[in-house]
Length: 245
Image 1 (spheres, helix red, strand yellow):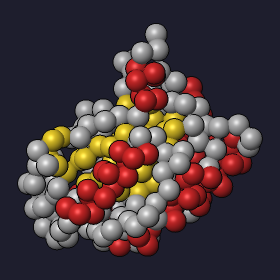
Image 2 (image 1 turned 180 degrees about the horizontal axis):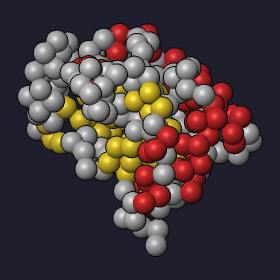
Image 3 (image 1 turned 30 degrees about the vertical axis):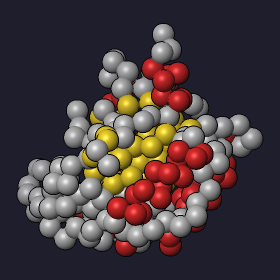
Image 4 (image 1 turned 180 degrees about the vertical axis):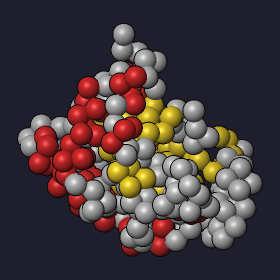
């Protein structure tokens, strides 16, 4: 299981990454991995260096109970140094394990779009493979356009850590928006107004809104309440998948 509120389990056929924007500055995955650099025989003996883990590729096929699976919580599946042939194997597993819902999240939105275009052409990714992009502020909002143009059935945004206003964004074709503040010893504060603007936009556009955390020294430090309410909405596609025999 996992402590991430919007998923059931994580699956990491790749670990390690490199920074692409200021949302990566205090990456929790890097902080965790680097603690074990040099520890012999530890999974993170090489710290946060990009590492392919082919021995994990078949794991979801062995999990019998349907679950929500966050893909590569400790990396980015569309890192430019991951061979396309390896990404193919990840997608082969996801397509075969259709009893699960896979949540694929990236900051490398143009590379994800290119890959999905090549793999699915005029079709779309299967409805149990959700495709999302991380957005931390207005400067990163172009990733949303790449996502909207990608041949995905279910698209979602992870606006975490929210480091500034995202501005006017187009949610057409987006099923789900997750918002959260940064956590850790160097956490940058998130302003209430930024969150409210996104929540209200989701309301107007009828998009499921999930508020993950205010953040702070620890993920739980600020709680999850926004104006006295916990927002835990999931996309409608999740309900239909959940009810499928």
